[in-house]
Length: 89
Image 1 (tube, rainbow, N blue to C red):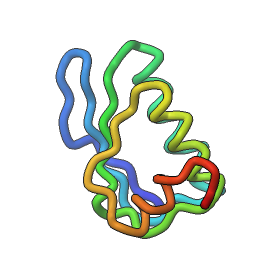
Image 2 (cartoon, rainbow, N blue to C red; image 1 turned 90 degrees about the vertical axis):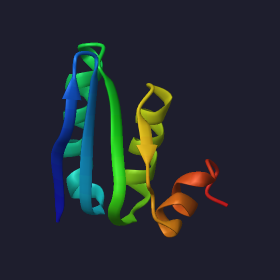
Image 3 (cartoon, rainbow, N blue to C red; image 1 turned 30 degrees about the horizontal axis):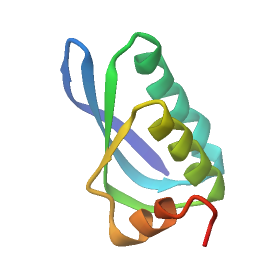
């Protein structure tokens, strides 16, 4: 299960809290939510403090979002480790 909630919004910025596990079936949901803000030139911040796990598809999607300027805050150690090595080491 994945839950996405807006925690702050101002002109040009939105903060989203992501909770649960980011696995294949939920990847399109988060990607679409971020894309709609990015397409309107809004800076996106994702609070990953309550994300317990990210699978390989989720990692790839998060890396694409980061490349587009999305900021990840408060990732747990496991999530940070999963996101930290681009080549999967």
